[in-house]
Picture 1 (cartoon, rainbow, N blue to C red):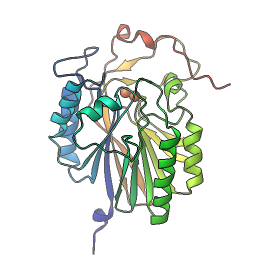
Picture 2: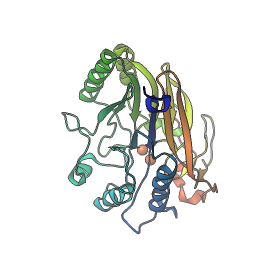
Picture 3: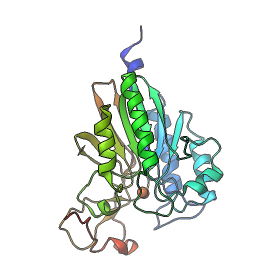
Picture 4: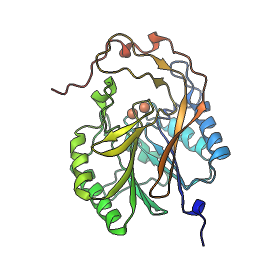
Length: 286
Ligand SMILES: [Fe+2]
Ligand SMILES: [Fe+2]
């Protein structure tokens, strides 16, 4: 008979890796050694995980050299891996480079893994050239089909996507998932047992719910931002740390989302490095 640990899903999710070609650094923050630390951390602490997912913004500028560096560094980890895309990635660039990409029948970089009673559903919210990603009708239809299967199979669903669908009441909401209500409708209509949604993109760790579903975000591998909430003006501070990935553990009833830091020293970065973070506009709702 299997033990409880054998039945317990352990899922590692990293996001916003933002690699540049080897040797290039942005804002004094070198994402390559940080990503190496992340891989080292997973190897040391979570080598028993079932899957490691990279949830988009793999590169900063979608260059071939950065994708090559990504593959070189992640080769140091032996877990099964899945790669998703974010707004800093360009699907066409990635697919030119990728050896064995996760692809749906429409050649979007999305897919699923069924593990220990769960369906890990990974959506492609990237749209080449657009900061504000979205899910077109094809992607929504594909999502609805995968959710219907999960329901028929009695699987709990963990949904991963790059763009946060939930509003955080921060300026980042202005470029969160576009038309999130369309995805929400698909989720609600599916009747699937969606136990957790997790996104990256916003560079901040948060927990809460979206349309009734538990929804969390992770800070990732690049700079981390402070909670700069609706009504604030002036400069939003960015921090060099913590860099974090998520570890989800679920037995189907208890689903815990942990945030594992692998770079901890937290200093405020020079505000002049982030001129776009002065007097930002918030998402217009009314
Ligand atoms: Fe990002
Ligand atoms: Fe992003």
